[in-house]
Length: 105
Image (cartoon, helix red, strand yellow):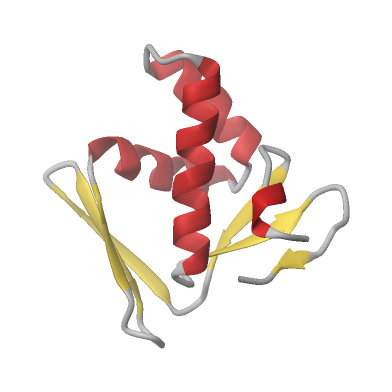
């Protein structure tokens, strides 16, 4: 499954070697194995928090729709773009609900 096919129906998992810290509403995510780190603004930090809590892109999307005034199409694009970037950097793993397998970067 290609990354372009990642949808709101995917599940996400934080890798065992990934840690994050939040400070003043912003988060830093670090992959201890690769040394890759990534900083998030307050909205990105909220997304990261929701993904860690439930792992569901659909549930995260629905929660964000209630919390922010943004067009659904724009929210979906922004959410999927962030998830793809975190996945590419090795900070998240993705699994397709339809196919039940992990998506490789």
